[in-house]
Image (cartoon, rainbow, N blue to C red; front, side):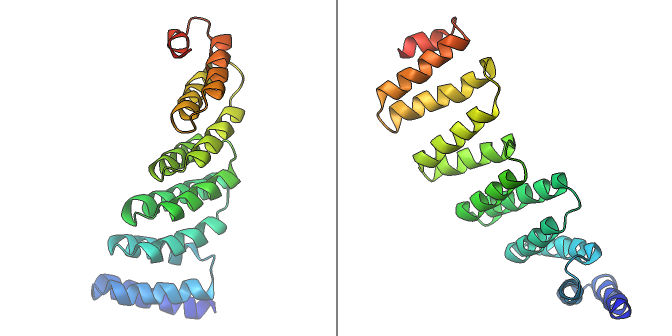
Length: 190
């Protein structure tokens, strides 16, 4: 197995560098990756080739595999963010992007970047219940105090503008005033 992988790696290098045949190189690296899913050299080569060729679905498959075999949570988290960004920008597939960011939250439940991305995606999809869920998740991740104010402001606006629930909005504005009695914006909203 090791010898076969070495031969295929040589074929891939030859195809990519001497023949400038990235398709043949990708096939050789993919064969290695299928033989040994944890082969990071093959994964890295496929990532480079698929990204250069804008082969986004194939790239996501390799990145997903790389995330599963990541040695630490921060590497897996970074890869999940990258998958989310590719799905969101290159594929314009918000559902797949949301799945990637949810996977990131599975690795780190307090990941603010993933929560921000999900909030934006759900707002773009006009999925206001999911926006509210992610804001409540963010709120629970924050220590009680002034750091909660921006999230509570967004929740108050969401309650009033999207759910037409003035009572819930007022509750958020009152909570804001309990943390910051000088919050003029909260007084204006009440």
